[in-house]
Image (cartoon, rainbow, N blue to C red; front, side, top):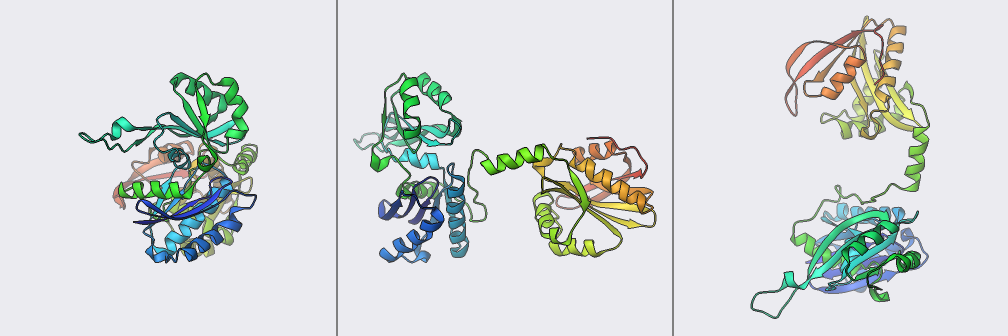
Length: 399
């Protein structure tokens, strides 16, 4: 089996081709250049030097995080692009697992530490057990890689406390070592050491070796399925969350240029998602009310309703999962009723799956009452629809 391995989860950029139990080639650069500059040229060079045809690759192993947000995105995007182009499976290798596997056969606690800033590290606890790999009646042992604690993001102080509780010798490696070496020296009460230079950073050959083991165990995914593990949100995402927290929900009429974004939300929320073309056709219909809700410039929810005479039928109202319980739905409904009243709408209708108790509770709070049942109305899965209605002047309650 032949695997192309990629690791750009830290400062180190590494590419390797591993075939069964042999490393065909490995290219590693630990220098002040962005992975966007180095990764693809490194892949191109290693393929040319080994006269490897990409079609001969059985799978692509990629260090999937945690680590540098930018590095992970570049590595994952590269692996996904190759996987899609070649129709090859991806093998997601946790970065910290790959680091620990560098110290093959070590029966001490292996503790990779990657600097996560703010006095935190990405880490895990591992060891190799020779006893578990002992073959009965033979002197041959194959050390078994054991995960004592899965990869996580914790404070250095908490890591030291946990290691002291184990009371076993520890081997450290990773880019967090030079950052927290003094803290380790001050806090650790157990014997410890640091891995030497040739094994103390990410290596693509290790990612490829683990990739073959994972592949044989059936741990593969498609290129479309692959997502990196960040463990923590990025600084940009934290800042955006803070802005959203301090901002108000703004509801306005939907724009044509938002159709693609709304269609993407549809596919994330509903099994019978509307297409972008269907959304554009709805926007062009003069007998509709189409609204979007945003906060700090981010689209959080939307609503579609069809009007006829003095009635309106709500066809869709949706809020992205992470923004629910933030009154987005209430603000959409409030704005919709104000617009409907201005258009002479007196009665609002909708239907909802019988099993969707959350939505039914929300609608009741918005002044809707259950009027009847439409048997087997929904598909995928088949389910009854509960019919609901309210008068436009019904008092609106908050979520």
